Length: 444
Image (cartoon, one colour):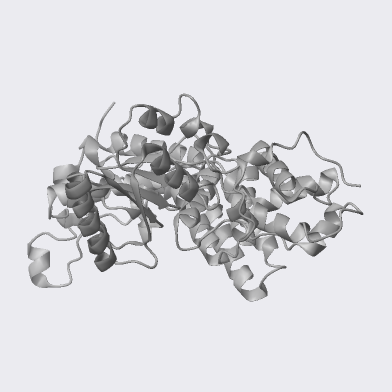
C-alpha cells in the first residue's frame, strides 16, 4: 500500500464541500490555513499587521498564478467584517464598476458598512477604467483589493498605485507544495500513488502553482493506490507543464533582461540557462538573436569586434538551417558574447557625441577638409592645406577634423578605449596618433 509522507493534517482545516474541483474544496477557511505566504500573513506579516490594527486600506496582491491571491483577499475581507464584491477585469467594464460603486455608496450611507471591491486581473482594465476607480477609492466609497500577475509599476496607472499598497506573493516552494500534497491526501483519505522520486517530479511539474498542483493530484487520485508510480510513469500520465512565460507580458521582458545581464556579466552558464528557459517556453529565436546583437555592440563592442560578426553569422545560419540543429548556432553565439572581453566605450562615445552635437548646434567644419568642386569654393579656401594621408608615413598626416571651436575641447574626447581585449591595441594606436599630432603642433 502507499505510505503517508509525514503526518497528515486534520480535516478540520479544509472546506467540507464535496463538489467542485479539488483546488476549490481545499480552499483555506482562515488566514492561519494559508500556505506559503508567511512574509505577509505570519505574526509580523504586513497584511496581518493591517488586520490587527483594525483598518484595512486599499492594496494590490501581485504574484504568479496559483499562489492564493483570491483566497487571501476573501479571507482578509471576512476577518475584517467588510462587505465583499468580486469582479474580473477580463469580464467587467466601467458600467459594472459604476453599478457596484453606487451600491457600495448606498450601503455606506444607509448602514454604515464599507465595501471591499476585489478585482481579479486588475491589469486588464484599460487606463480609462482604472481612472474611473480613483475618486471612489480616494473618498473611501470602496476599499480596492486588486490581484495581478503583471508588474503593477508597468500595468497600472500611477495615480491608482499611489492610493494602494502593493504586496508581492511568492511562488510556492518545495516545502509549501509538499504540505499542500499532504492536505490533499488527508482530504481524499488516501495517499497519492507515487514513489519518492515521482512525488518530487510532481512538485517540479507544478512550477510553484498550487492550483495546478491540485489539478494534477485530482487526476492521480483516480488511479489505484498500488503500484507506486515511477517518474517515467508519472511523466507518461501527466504532460509536463509549459514554463510560466507570456511572450507579450512581464515574464517575456523579465527573462530577456536576465539573459542580457548574464551576457554582460560574463556568466555564460546563466546566459545559456535563460536562453533555454525562453526557448522551451516557445520564444521566437529571433528575439534572442536581436538581444545578442545588441549585447555584442553595447557590452562587448570594440573589446572584441568579432562578437557582432559571430552573432550575425550565427543568426543567418539559424535562419537557413532551422530548429533543432540550429540550436548549435544559437549556443555558439551565446557563448561567444558571454565569454568575450567587455567594453561599452564605443556606444558611450557616440552618446557623448550626440549630446555635444545637440548642445553646440551647427558648428562649421574646417574649410581645409571641405571639397572645392567650384571656383567659389576654392576662393573661400575650401580644401586649402588638406593633406592626403596615404602620402605620409603610416598613412597619417596629423590633421584635425573636428570643428575648430571643438579642437582641444575635452568634451570632444569621446572615445576612451578600455584596457581589455582588442581595445588595448586600439588604445596603443590612438596614443601613437596623439604623439604624432603633438609633434606636428610642436608640443613637448
